[in-house]
Length: 340
Ligand SMILES: NC(=O)C1=CN([C@@H]2O[C@H](COP(=O)(O)OP(=O)(O)OC[C@H]3O[C@@H](n4cnc5c(N)ncnc54)[C@H](OP(=O)(O)O)[C@@H]3O)[C@@H](O)[C@H]2O)C=CC1
Ligand SMILES: CC(C)=CCC[C@@H](C)[C@H]1CC[C@H]2C3=C(CC[C@]12C)[C@@]1(C)CCC(=O)[C@@H](C)[C@@H]1CC3
Image (cartoon, rainbow, N blue to C red; front, side):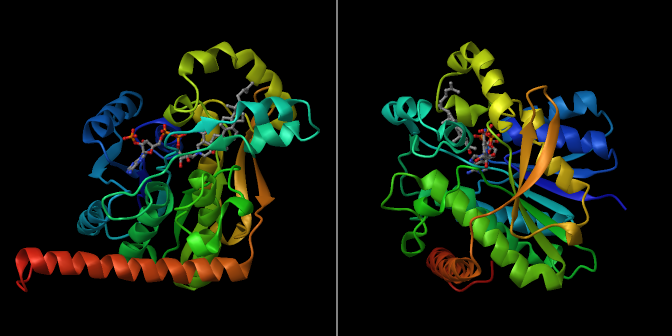
């Protein structure tokens, strides 16, 4: 039977490279590119079809940062497919990143230098804002929209008789100290990206606890540092090209500088080939590239605990209920009590 695979944010970077790799792995795949911009999605589809001309590639309009879009996209998915084998939750943003150059130069001469390059700890801050749903944009995009999508697609992910998999794109930048359970959207901090990725780690653990018995398995990956639109938002692409030799050098010491989207998609590709029962719910699967350019995957234990993950799960379910009741009130105001 053909596998149904959905990839969010599939039109560029690691998501697009993953699609290419999955089609090479399994030409029978039914692949769905879930993107917010249909022109970019169409371009990605055309690019994939040039190397895989008989591939089954569908497009889906999905803005994970918008509740309305997630609900509409989920309806569309349920109309098109009767099960989902893999849901890659890859879309992500890091808006308005700022580098702390003072901390960077200080870090260069400290014994923590390797960790600094691998995790960017203490180097980056971002400016977040409220979106039109009244949610913090980074939280809404990197976490909540994807969670709502899973909840909406439960009939296709849970209890279909087969196992289904969700694979979250987290980061080695995820850090417990950037996350506050009393402010899970990170409305009053300066590290919304790190906070949202730490919340992803916690949520994946909770999903496994709550859904494994229904056949749904959740995993977390980090693609390493990859040259994509996300990193070109931190420093311009010409600068990255200029320092490429330095980055190849650093790669010898950290292995986390995967640098190309193809290398970055190693862990997501590897997970596609694994049996869910063999995976560790407390592990993050890292794409790594050695100094000699060899790709491999390493699982590392996440800095998470069951209690915090359970509290976050309840808080997010609560937020989901609030959001749904807002949507239903808005629909009643718009259409009255008529069936829509
Ligand atoms: N690059 C890196 O070094 C690292 C990246 N990651 C994670 O990997 C994932 C992929 O990022 P990467 O490939 O690097 O970056 P890109 O910016 O190239 O890709 C991000 C993708 O997500 C899409 N996207 C963003 N916001 C939304 C939205 N609201 N709805 C739907 N799609 C959206 C983008 O679409 P559009 O083209 O329309 O903007 C794009 O297709 C992210 O989750 C990122 O956090 C983790 C660690 C390191
Ligand atoms: C490499 C040199 C000589 C300079 C670049 C310094 C920083 C801009 C760079 C060092 C570590 C990088 C890093 C990220 C962004 C760019 C750095 C801070 C990430 C935060 C990008 C997104 C992620 O999710 C992380 C895994 C990256 C961690 C390392």
